[in-house]
Image 1 (cartoon, rainbow, N blue to C red):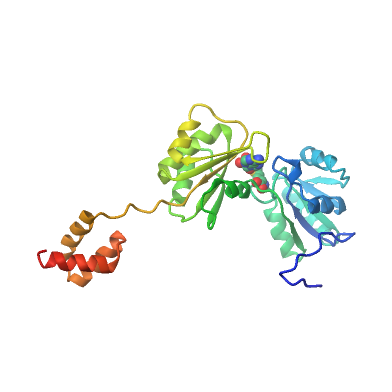
Image 2 (image 1 turned 60 degrees about the vertical axis):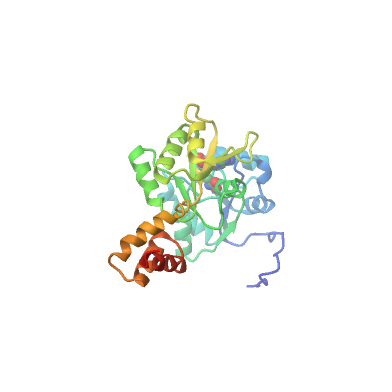
Length: 292
Ligand code: SAM
C-alpha cells in the first residue's frame, strides 16, 4: 500500500472506483452546505448505502443527484442485516450514514463497525458534521478535555443517578437533549453539579441557530416555563475549583493539627487538606506554635 508522509495531505480526489470496505460517512446536521465533497463522491461510488431511514437519506441523495441503492439499517433490523452488510463490504464499497451528522455518535453503527473490523473488513472514516463538536467549537467552554455523554435517561431518578456519576469528571460534559426535556435536564444538572458555566446550543447550522451560555441556574430559569423548539446540545464546564482557603481557615486547621502533631506534620497535613502551599502552612504553623 502506498504510504503518505503524515505532513502531506492526500489527494482530494477519491479513486475513480472505491476500494471494498465499510465507509462511515458523516452528513449535515441541518445545513446541506456542510455536506463534504468527499462524502458526495463516496456515496455516489458506493455499491450500497446503509441508512437509518430511507426517506430521510433519500432526500439527501436526491439533492446531490446520487442514485446509489439504500438499505435500511436501524435498531430493529440491525442484527439480521449486519452479517450481509459485512460480507458485502468485504468485496464492495458499502457506506453507512445516519439521519444526520456522524454515524455511531448517538446513532446506529457501533456493532457494525466492531464486527466489520473483527471480520478483517477495512473501515474508512469520511468525517464531517457532528452536533457535539459544533457546539464545543462555539461555546467558549474548555475543550482540552471533554466527555460526550449522549442522551441522559428520561426518568428523573435515573437521570440524577447518571449525572451524579459524572460529577467529578474533570472535563466539559456534552449532552444531547430535546426541547421538551431541556428545562428538567438543566435543573437536574444544576442540582447535581452546582452552578457551573454551561451552554445550550440549539438548531446549530440552521436558520434559527443559537448558542446561549451562562451559569446553569440562569439557563435553567430561562427555559423553565417555555420549552424551546428544535435540536439541542447541552454543555457543562468542568467542576469549579474549591473556594480558596482563608487565613482564618488556615489558622484554625493548624491549631487543631498542632494539638496532636509536630509542626512539620501539621503543616503538611493542613497544606494538603486546604490546597495551600506547604511553605506557607509551615511558616504559619511555626508562628502559631511559638504563640505568635
Ligand atoms: N449523529 C448525530 C451527530 O453527529 O451529532 C447525532 C444524532 S442524535 C440521534 C440527534 C441529536 O443530536 C439531537 O436530538 C440533538 O440533541 C443533537 N443535534 C443534532 N443536530 C443538531 C443541531 N443542528 N443542533 C443542535 N443539536 C443537534
